Image (cartoon, rainbow, N blue to C red; front, side, top):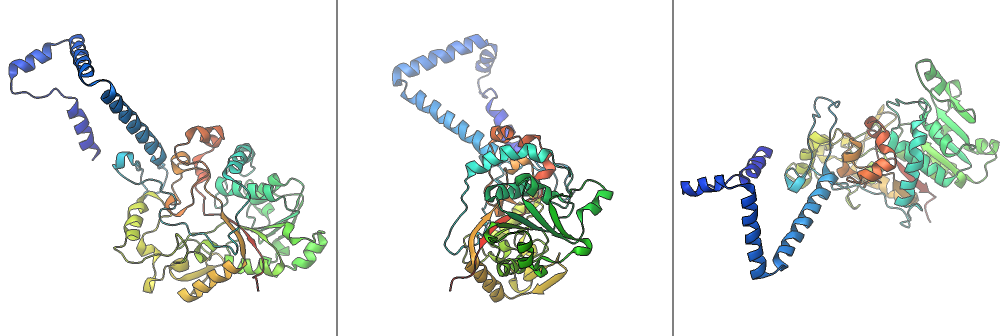
Length: 440
């Protein structure tokens, strides 16, 4: 297609073919100066006859067309790194004048948003997020674990830091610490606040093989002292730490357990502020997430069609080669058109538990979640893929980014351009929620 376009462009610059050989020879012999004079003369004659209105309108149209083309191009150009797997080969994903049409299209396939009891939202704004990014980038550059493979990337690290810094809790609890990166992020947000880390393996064990972080002001339920979050006597722990107001506690889950299960456990203990790191999209992940639970046909952007000739099927098939996490209809839908959870299954515990559930049960789960939700807010990607060059998550299933595609100047000013592109490949819809007991 590009070849055809280029040929048309070149052909438009060729000398018009004429049946009169003498006329063609005369045209070839004319100098550039003479042609310029001839054009000027014709232009003056045109203006004398018709005035300046039409030339001005034509010039304005060209300027508008050019501006639209540049903006449209910069917002949709996405370069795919050649270091990706062999299936995801480099593509030029630009939609310049619709030649390809594969724009980022944030949310075009739906980004189901859990409904809260009173439709409350967070206090912060996009301006607060941009200001936070400018502050966080140099902090992130000083992280002790540079290669946090299988752990949080930049997007979620920023989200956790920003939320903790904004809420200023009296105590922070994390379930799942891995090498300690999330503990370090919490510490950067709140330098003097106590942290409780509940994790099967103590982060110090990773120090033998490479970088890890162990916090000196943290109480670890780890190793031989490990107790699962749901089995901790939180009343005694809160008393020991002098915490009387549980609304001043922030819980961070990165333990790959069913988020429905963790939500019920946190609610029973009396906690209100929760962050789930891996809020997996429908059809993906190793545990039942809030995003999956709230993916319902009555929710805007929710629900799916397993019909192979549907618009959704065609869009998904078209986008799949460009994004590693994109799914086609065959991958999304299980037997009997069961698309909820992961092909009709509710996964838990790193996918060690895999329970088949009916749509009715899935629906009731969403109604329960809505009954206790005061606030639901998904952390947005920090920037569009034309800037970060991320290749994993499909923007069509995501909320819009903080820094939109095309805002290269802002991206550079915030310092995001200094980071290696691999740190932007870990986005999985991290979510912050506030919960309270159902209203009677």
